[in-house]
Image 1 (cartoon, one colour):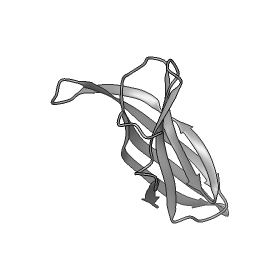
Image 2: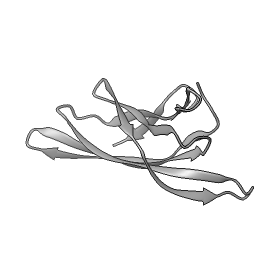
Image 3: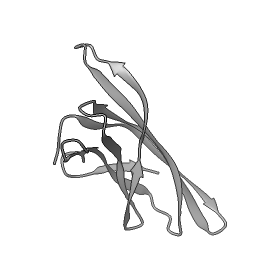
Length: 116
């Protein structure tokens, strides 16, 4: 389900060739309206035809011009793949565990495409 309370900030992916395979490093931010203390935030990404989940970690809160607080969550991870991909597809998720509701920012159903 798409919700207006989670959205992708900046996401970068870098690639390095190491001994016949490729190391990918994902860094970025996800913004979340704080509707519950009991939640999971992260990205669901695809590389080489396989989908994976990467859990985000709380970083800090920001005060908006309207006086609301949003949370900044960060992702930072690396993984290896034998294929050299030129893009990574991804979407951000926010699972509110208190209400049993999952929200996604998947770029209107098209997923985000991050060039490498």
